[in-house]
Image 1 (cartoon, rainbow, N blue to C red):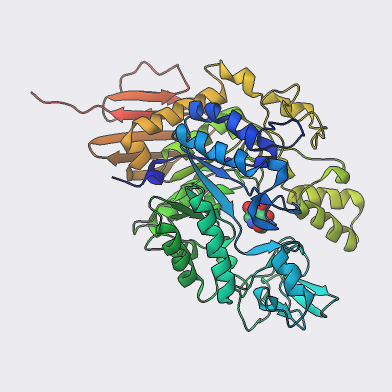
Image 2: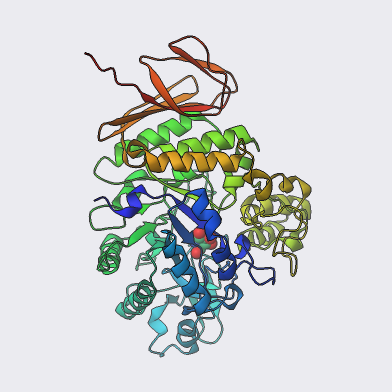
Length: 534
Ligand code: NOJ
């Protein structure tokens, strides 16, 4: 029997914005539990929860101050346990985001570490007398001076997110205890945050710059020696528990590096941002990435498929705010080879949010970009544009359960000024409309579940021509063909055999026997009829 996650579709819940159950303006576990029936009905199999541990939330929970506590904004341990029980009761698995690379600067461990150079926990973090040139991924130096002990500490992200020193075995032990705690609570696996960053080069060589001398190349602060062995140790520890799943966030554009992190005793899968964060609605680019992934992953690794997340612009907005394109992308994501991760709100076509008021920006990455731009002499307006480009608030607005009142987000409303155009995507309006994006997602998810060739098949072929991506997937005796028209024009395709249509948005199929016409940005999913000779 194949592992459960190989056939699953995951749904990412960005907790603060998903559903507020207690009316304080912030999403929480009570809220998520109340939406489990919605998720079941949608047809997903697993939930990825963004961090819910106690945190000052400088970076929305990716700065954990206590790994053993539920952040009070999100509820109590009891609320968490009820949620897990209720999810499992509906056959939905739950994976938790786990940040092993860094803790909040408010974490007790760091407070102790920074208290004196001789403290036993001093070496739990990375301290140096002088900084090198490493840059933080949010901008600016990755080193922060600490007055008390007159040394610099390393932070790959915000200064409030302090990198742990994974060369220290006590750190490893402490984190394995954390992992055990949550597995014992019934978590079905983890999404491991920036997992290729755990080790940095301990000779602290300066990073080089690209040819234009503009962008730093992160040569010495990620993918370092020893990281893969550490990944194996983590995977071995987690997989002592049967049936647990590990997905890694590996920040790398190099497929050959990505590939090393999954399969063969390592993580089960890793995210592939080359497909996920593709900027243009361009079939040929997408096709090249699908082929490159397929070729690199030949040896029993399984790709992931996603097009949005809490860290990037939503794909509907990247691709021109068009619902037909959103349907096409959904079709690709839920039929191509790989484990799909839907980002909450994409199923109802939520759009990006851009602010014209810097004071309303919440994301640390956007705010840091704004400050750095001002420092470099840019005007407020220029800095705001840069900040909006960097800010991840765009995809973090509250789930639009009800467009008028934003149910549950009325008090302490962090997004009170969500502009009217975002109201286009309202869940309630789509529930009963058979042509809505939401109904389309449901159909796709049902189809994926029903057909083994879709949820577990391998490519028989994968082609591209004239803005059309075509692939056939087979498993057992089933063969399913998917044709995706990425152009703004109608396209006719010739059929080589009789077909049985499984899903199509266009009802005007050409009458000719062996030709089918796809409207612009339309896809068809069909089974080839097998001729039985008598
Ligand atoms: C990746 C997370 O997805 C992102 O939101 C966060 O800012 C960084 N890791 C740092 O933890």
